[in-house]
Amino acid sequence: HGVSGGALRAWTANSFEAAQALLERYRRERPEGIDGVALFLDRVNPELIAMIPEGVHIVAHVLSVHAETLAQKNGITAVYGIPDMRYDEAEKTWYIGEHRMADGTVISIDGHENQLIYHNSGKVYLGSLPLAGRAGGRCGGARGGR
Image 1 (cartoon, rainbow, N blue to C red):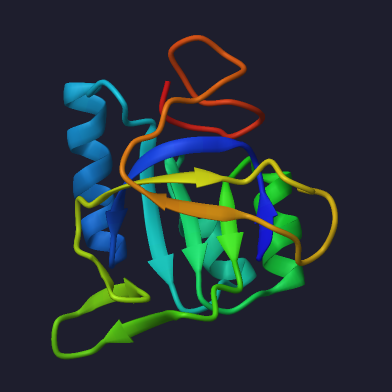
Image 2: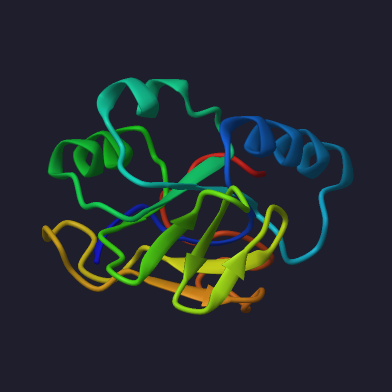
């Protein structure tokens, strides 16, 4: 998978509206073990990157080199090119494999590995994992959250 940014724990969002609502909730509550919101998308283009508010990061089905470069430039943690990711139109919800990514599902993203090499080893984990490298928060250059 293509990657950019650092590592973080996030609530999942299946739409821009859900991402904005969860981001507002995150900013109010500052819950332990959550660093922001991960917006699930089919693909990312430059216009979408410009629309993403600070504190929202990306998990995308299709890899886009241009979007990956923009994500890195804008400090967005992102994982791209997930082959077993699919959208259920009836539910308006993304799945990774058999795991339903309903709005508010907690995931952890590792965007560190080989972050400057195209199309390499980003990871998405179900649940909130402890992060190493910086006490009590996100690692690396990811923006938003704190």
